[in-house]
Image (cartoon, rainbow, N blue to C red; front, side, top):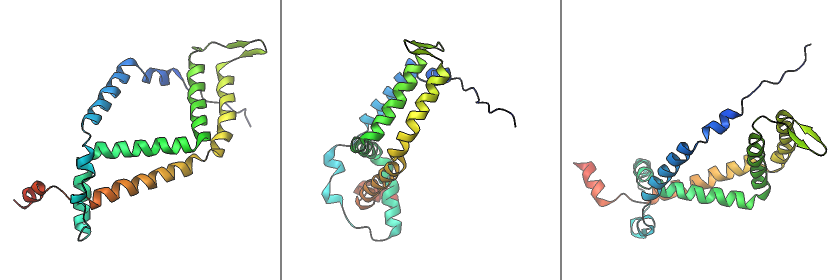
Length: 176
């Protein structure tokens, strides 16, 4: 049996994806989404809340409201994501450790890290990062956190979308 070889993955491709132009595009996209937020008076309009008559009406409401309130729903999912990370500090620490480790190692530009205790190659540093991050990652339970986030987001968004009536103008437009 031959020796185990580890495939070479050029990590410079990761840093090439995070260019200043891409960050500008992401910020402008975020500004566009924020500009589409509906005001709280409209989003929480209790006069438009009602129980749907049948499943067809639920589908119609959800289809309309997901498009109309999509920026508000993105904000809700973002808030729930931050809440999930703040309540799971170990997962937040692991994410920060991996992100900071990858950033720090990529800053070496392929050079070895020289410390008083020895010289370490980038592959040794990445291996050490994996050896530390994987067990901590299992302890942080990212899968259960993700399942909670998916479930809570679905309940919040779909319940609002199904109970919020469409505006009267759209009901008349559909009939014509």
